[in-house]
Amino acid sequence: MGFLKWLGGIVVFFWLLGLLFKVGGYAINVLLVIAAIVFIIDALVGRRKNY
Image 1 (spheres, rainbow, N blue to C red):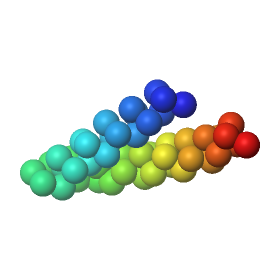
Image 2: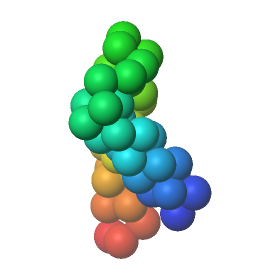
Image 3: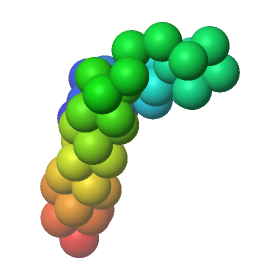
């Protein structure tokens, strides 16, 4: 799941760049939703492995 953390981090980074520089519009918000889903999946799968 390390890959998903990196992927989610990159998506959040580009989302923040989009907010700061007002580029991307709707696509940036879609990337944010994708990043949130990736982090939630990673958190749920990570918990199962720890127990």
